[in-house]
Length: 430
Image 1 (tube, one colour):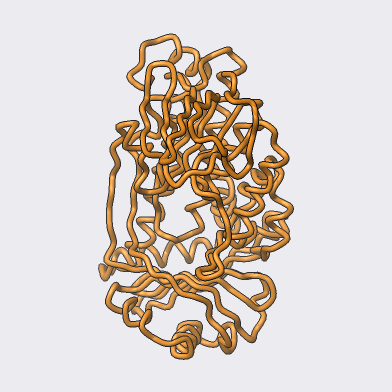
Image 2 (cartoon, rainbow, N blue to C red):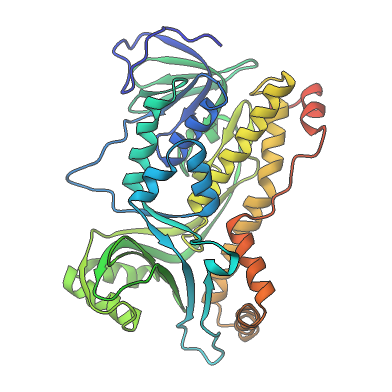
């Protein structure tokens, strides 16, 4: 579709009374939204990304990190941002699991090393601020992608041949395909009439970065405790990021501690693994919940990232799963281009939803099962978990298979002819 008007402004448009007619509109300017816009623009599609301008905050800096596995790094390389992201990151050369439950049936310590697969690292732990900055800068190098700065998209109206968006500033956008990357409370998901399966846990996660005196040796360590996992992930030098899952009451108590008291609490849980904790960054706490969309695309709207699925912060699945959404969607749209099909039509909607179903639902089930196995006091459940970790320790081929699945899981492929068959038949998804 032609673009109106012709001028571009990378940080927003001065005129706010215009209508933009584009191929793709992405709603959301987090890492998933920015990456989706760059990937789809790479297909030669006129693409806009709508949302607030990503910028650092001096008063409330973003200290979050993302453990990106090798498949995600390869994806970032494909859109031109992998190298700059990894420059600010630490490699993940090994993942260690330690049973810290104190239960009668105790699993062995288990370590997965990237070298067993002939890799230097499973991936990299990337600061969120570095990732967003690298993605946003890449818009300057991608002529078919631009950002329309807005406080919010206030209206999303699917129509037979396009989706109409309206921003808080009064701009209108018409797009053949809309990508919802607007988080767990996604307005685009609501506009697509997509229902979700939701669940909660009696757990709260604490997150922060901290500095320690011993070298982490690029090993991520996950202590399995009765209240949930306590996970450290390496950052450059002698810094690590922490995700600490606790009961809501204990999490509230920990959040009330001063920095010195909180540092001593981290040391206690680490059992001396990283030496003394000499500094801690700002802390955040959030309740653990889960969400999965019942379908991932309808009415010319495709959902990616947390608009499609929310998982507890276990096993580095969240953002990696979102990037796999983008890869799948890009493949479906590229196939539509190859066959001359509508990039937002029923064929693409059904093919994308079909392609993501197995990966998302299997990952959600696996993370949920692992988390609940830690919480369960039922001896058979504890025994099954212990036996599984014993097998991973003792059987190298099984351990390597599990590692490969974690890096690049087997996903159902779109069956031959599925796109064409779906496109030729009337569909409620259009």
